[in-house]
Amino acid sequence: MKTIRLITTSFIILITGVLATSCYKTKKADLVVHNAVIYSVDENFTTYQAMAIADGKIIELGAEREIMNRYKADKFIDAGSRSVYPGFYDAHSHFLGAATNKGELNLFGVKSESEMIEKVIAFAEKNNREWIVGRGWDQNIWAAKAFPEKAKLDSLFPDRPVYLMRIDGHSALVNQRGLDLAGITAETKIADGIIEKDAQGKLTGIVIDGASTLAERQISPLKNTRVAELLAETEMECFKAGLTTVTAAGISIKELLFLDSLQKQGNLKIGIYAMLEPEEKVIAFMQNGPFITDQLTARSFKLFADGSLGSRGALLKKPYSDQPENYGVFLLSDSILDLYAKACYANGFQMNTHCIGDSVNALILSKYAEILGGITDLRWRIEHAQVVSEEDRHFFADYAIIPSMQPVAAMSDMAWAEERLGSDRMSDAYALKSLKNQLGFLALGTDFPVDNMSPINNFYAAVFRENANGEPKDGYRMDEALTREEALRGITIWAALAGFEEEKKGSLEPGKNADFVILDADLLKAPKKDILKARVLETYVGGISVIEK
Ligand SMILES: [Zn+2]
Image (cartoon, rainbow, N blue to C red; front, side, top):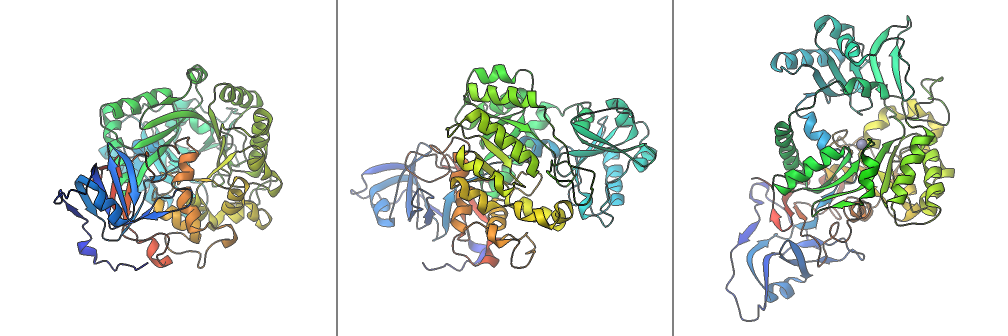
């Protein structure tokens, strides 16, 4: 295969009008993509040179002359020998959360507590919403590595509530006014979370898991019109990153119906795989069966079983290496777990449980095994599957449970994960390949906005196990890396399979949606150093170009 050296300023893909129609062109298409290296990502990983599309679906793939001689079309795209892939599918992300975060203070990447406070002050001046809401701080990247405390916020904002969520969404720093509104005092007892106190027993303002939810409930939501604007912005970012289907993990029925209404009005075009969150009406909703439209699928339900490793809420079999009395938190009760697992099973819903620690993975896998009773096609998933003991891995194969993992997470966590887990447990963590081997596949996502949404970064992290700065050199635990083909499947067909959408998405085959991307690099063959530089030139959803130029 010859590689094409690109001149960056002239990558524009040639679009030509109807070519002189010769009599041998007997078939009609809306669009023909040709002179391409099309990775179909079908069963045999076949590549083609050309593809014909009509009514938003792929009708035929083949060799250049074969397709060009056969089809008349309104539009031809000469891809200039560049590579074409199925539109990327993020199997675990928070599309709605990523959008609403944009209406709030962005604290991703702040380098210290004082930088965070400065940002809060500047944001508070410009913003007249009652609560000051921010998200994204991470004490692990600060010099002191300790959780921030509320004292400074209390003196700056005695009368205005402040809620600053940590990067993982599992904990927050809340000022005294916010704690008061949430009814949290030093005496509050909470089973599914942690209210942090200092040595004197005073509140520090750090609330973890269920305790942060208590405060979050007091925050009035953004207006729908604003959310719609923010969703449109987020959708465009996704398209530019090459994503054509994303996950809305953990949304309410009301939010689902809002997304559906935006799609029906033509204001959202991206595919959405929704996972419903626990709420009173959800079982009644499940009893009506899966909710499926062209671009929205809701047939799964998501539970949080533990917190995150970063905030030491992940439930471990043995205590944290850097906090010897702490095992993390179990966010469910046995009866709640049983209730939802049985409801999902009875109504043919997929159950997706957020599991980080080895203890919670073991517990949820055994619960799934008990309810499923053997191999089924319910495709129940473990979200993250971050630390899974070797002795528990067999459950994935024995009960056809899908690991839904985030290669970029290991890259974000590796600097401190060993402090939390100790060296002995590290071989159980971020084990992409070992878990893939159980069932023969796994679904890959980024968990954006927790990590960057780029499927190319995620591919790179899965294959080379390095972050975007090329650290650690030569990769982190390369024995758990995926091959390029596996990583590409993970962000396309395997993700679609984990969302019951493999009949219409995830690969380029006749009858499937014409969701595809054109990249300026060949992910399967380009040298490692060029992968992170790869750019998405075009994104198509249902045969329509969706990137604003
Ligand atoms: Zn998530």
